[in-house]
Image (cartoon, rainbow, N blue to C red):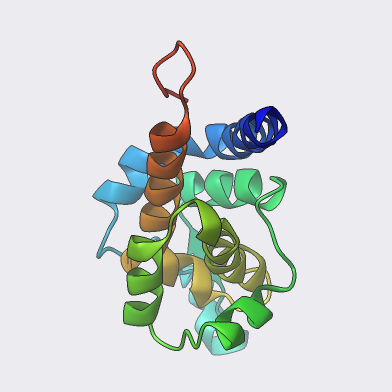
Length: 157
């Protein structure tokens, strides 16, 4: 029994360490819901002579950079989507809302799809902000940690 409790505490501490750098972005992610976090650069008639490219909000880029170097990234996120039959944004929201301690890998998979996938598919980062996917995943992770943390700091990350 003690080993089980010890293991849970170690796992919880690793979850805290992984999520902590992303928490300062929660207010921005909440405020940015439904808004575009990128625009197409169109200065100097670039659309006439070349391919236009996206310009992202600086806060979004910082969030993606932090998330990308965290242990929350799962390069096998496509398997999570296939295994749980996640196809639409509503499916993602439903899985996020139902996620608990045992579904941490699902939250990691959803976050990874947008962070890692956005490196090659330009609209994924902005889509995750406007559809509130980033916000919902990080918020659910925070709630799971606060629920299971029985430390003297009262579960605050």
